[in-house]
Length: 477
Image (cartoon, rainbow, N blue to C red; front, side, top):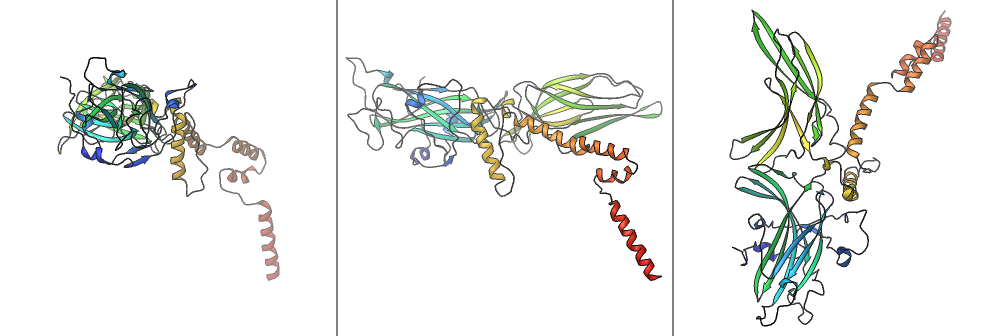
């Protein structure tokens, strides 16, 4: 049955003034290599103000769609994925009374006036029958500061109390929502749990003096941008886990030791992850069916004790290790596309563990979406401006040079960290040449300490000092 009657909306949302809520800084719009000529945004400029409302419209969870016979809404999303620090862009198609005048012989419809049209981006977490809205961003398309287009409003009936009487028409209203860098957990879906982002358009109007609400909602892909200087860098101390099994065989104690370790904890979905594994089989029997697997764990917070839902991502069978042998190798395990780790939210969290069965060696890892560090080119300028502003705010009181974000910065930071670590542990090419020249000289041993960081005493100073001591001895005699 079609719901054409008005649905109760939170009164606090309707009664709030235009300038309520905290404003999110805008970084302009996205760039496109083919954007040229007159566009929808040039014909009618999208409102640039994005704000966080004081009252969250939780009714979107229960009523994402509210149709009406006289007003039709349509949402056009400009891209399949949007990044934190950039913008969510698109357009709202608004059709009033089918877009044309009513035919002759029909009764004249009641006067239709529009009060406000608002676009909202909300993040919703679902766990079973429980639902929670963890983020909400809004922008107004039609309000007292943004009247409807001229071809839409009736010229013979001016607006009163910020209500515009509209006539049958078709209108396209562009919108742009500015996103913060840290937006929330990535989208995720399983049998019982769901995290999603929705773009929802709400039109508030009156038909013959009776208030109505019309809503249209579409799901979108929104990702938080990870810090490029920290996302893929190695841990200060590698993560190493060890387990062992002891058994008795013919009166002697046999031990099998398994050690697994990783240099970094964050890995990319759709890429392989690498784990170093060492098996020390000090027994007489061979180790068989040693498997390295990626395990997904969904923790659902019901009451005091959490429940656990497990699923396997990928499994790698390792070669058997015969008795009395040691084996050490780097194993690659493919991370399936679409897997992401979700930090603890209201009703649960999603984590991944790379481990080896039977000995129960587990390494907690974090899986991120590839576009969280490889920013789409259209949003790169916006995200770069946001990240640079964030770094300038951190280092405003220190004499650190200004930070400039570049494409692939996360991969560059990881390589730079490895290079600096190797440089600290080894001597440079110039230092090696200095040591070689010092060893070729007869008294090269005196120069060797200066190369490794301990300055050697100068030869002239030693001779001069010895001369002074001889003169003092002669005076005493």
